[in-house]
Image 1 (cartoon, rainbow, N blue to C red):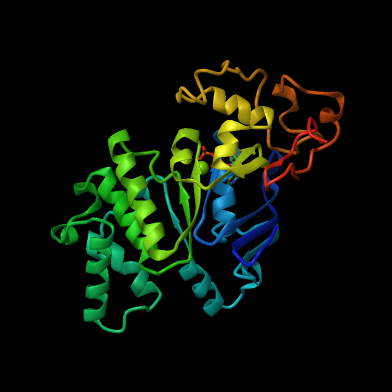
Image 2: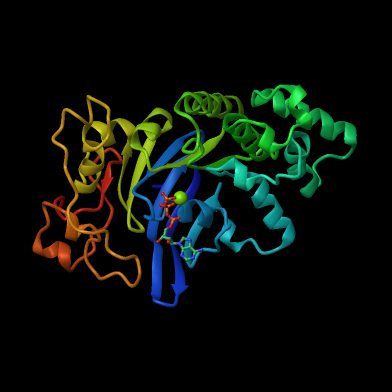
Length: 319
Ligand SMILES: Nc1ncnc2c1ncn2[C@@H]1O[C@H](COP(=O)(O)OP(=O)(O)OP(=O)(O)O)[C@@H](O)[C@H]1O
Ligand SMILES: [Mg+2]
């Protein structure tokens, strides 16, 4: 439900890929809002469509249909170069693997200055230099690293460059697509803390994508759970962990190594195969693997419905 606190509103977003084998429903009618200053975690198994949601939101993949509004402006209506540039400034993305997303022939300084140059946001070299060195300090990169190339830096520092490149345009919203999944566990915590500090300092709003519920738990205010192109549950992070409703969410939780939430519960092993996202059949996409599957689940697709206090679930068990 859109309110005055809503920064980003996504309505009926679809992204289909037309493949030789049929239409791949990577993102199939997904709706959610993100409030100003909030982090929405997006979790689910590999291939369920998380990155495609993140990319379609900022039009790195042009959506098949739907609406995406940022502070009331439908960004899918943007057509002119000026509009597109404004959108690129306001909405940024940080990728999983900074090594492959950074140009290996550019040094730290140039990598961070690049978005300023492309968007013509520094009038003089002096202004550019000031902005880059200030940003390096903000993300915890020592100024002596300005001349270093990506291959000379460790994964944590490379991801700090990725974050600096997103932040230097002063965006309102950032998609974080598995930003710590490629990092050593010890460095993951540092980068998560940095993102948390930056969020407070610059009033940022995040969509934080991860396949790992225990990572998402630390940073999210609310969590959305995806299964095969659809959101099956959204709630406050506490409710997802303590009062999960969807059988798929329960299965995901039972597998995580957090005593309170995971191991003390009976591990639910998912049976059956993940169905193909190509030309999916009607009915609940999880039906074939669900221990609580009923007849209706095989024919009718459940809608995402509010079960109270914003806890939404798409499951026929809740009527
Ligand atoms: N450019 C593309 N062309 C065709 N199919 C694609 C394309 N990008 C993604 N897909 C397909 O869309 C589905 C969703 O992929 P996506 O990368 O969004 O999943 P994900 O949840 O981010 O997975 P992971 O956890 O592995 O990153 C997959 O079936 C994938 O093969
Ligand atoms: Mg992905």
